[in-house]
Length: 519
Image (cartoon, rainbow, N blue to C red; front, top):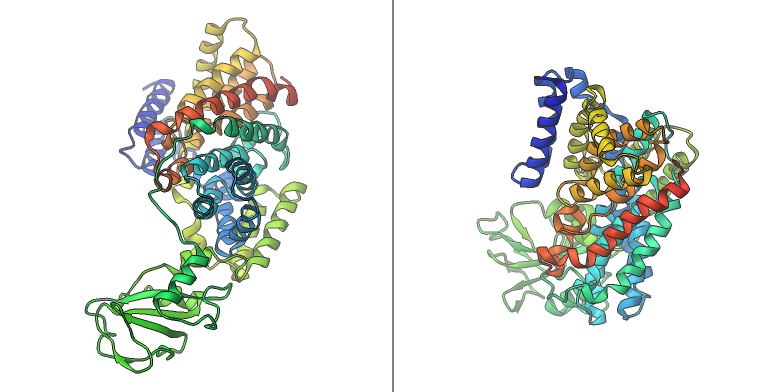
């Protein structure tokens, strides 16, 4: 089969597989790489080159940095400090939530920022008497806008920067994205405020843990006095477990205040139905509820034992405690990474890998947690789709599509060509990953820029901007899906508030970007 034909067939099949949602994204990406090899379009090293690409390693390491800020309570602390002082007015809360999530997204990615702030926003909405559906969609949409503030905001930024450099241009600076990111974010906030009536009012399907109320509830249910030690703190906390059927604990003698056999946890209190088991020893039965106190690491380890059924996962409770153990180290390592990225002393991938290694070596994040923190679906997606971009360039497919596009457009000018490319990106980005979309469209955009003898910089930056406009469907980005259940959204709730934002991003990409990065 002709290489160009094979490349186009593989592209069409990949898009169909992405849109169908029946094949895991990672399998589609690996299938693309293997198909390029079996059809002879690329050699085996070329087809698998994405798995060793510095861009992929950079993105993987950033997930570890994001995990450190989340696990040590840095994001919880920032959220409580900022949102806690925002009052109860919806407009004020929307502005504060949008600016906070945008700032966090710039440092730790869209998904990390939304996941960290989502429980806090739901709790704040409940306290303010506002439906969480009025705040959670602005949370997700503002995160997409915040991804344009810094190089680290989203994998797309890193990808377009590498494409620009590989096409004879230059890499974008660490803070350079802010030249478009700041006005885009401000415009997003204004549109979110004006489109308040377009946001649905739904009954929340989920209520996350409110630490203050959670501690009060435990004291009441277990009849603990107020002078009981700090229930939930940076270094230690409590968790509730239920004795499982056939547990080896059944039949053992326990009393409130005793330590576990290893001496690492304390049985703070116990209940059997409505009965408080306190004051004397009791024989453990299946279904007994025990309130355990100890260091967070010990609680996490011991509650993984099949002998007990955990009620509240201590690992999740710990994330809600502001500035826990290792927070200062996480912040320090983050700042060091930012300095390396901003100054260009080392390549971006090296800076991120150094930060990830430092977090593990200083025990801010365990090795196991670091591996689990990496979104392997994202990593495999990018690694598998990079060879398709390579095939677009090496086979001349990108040039062929670009020539066809320019023939249709005639002498309409660079803005019209950019509009066509951004329009394709915008539509595809609502159906498949914006990362995959940019990897497909970027080679075509480069060919168009070369054919028109224009700079590649505005084309790449425009793709980054419009690639962030994932607002019309819940499947456009994981962050949109993340807020769907807690807010009680339906599939059709997104396009009404999302459409004005998508058009705004499109206009910024086509008309504002070329003012800053001239053709």
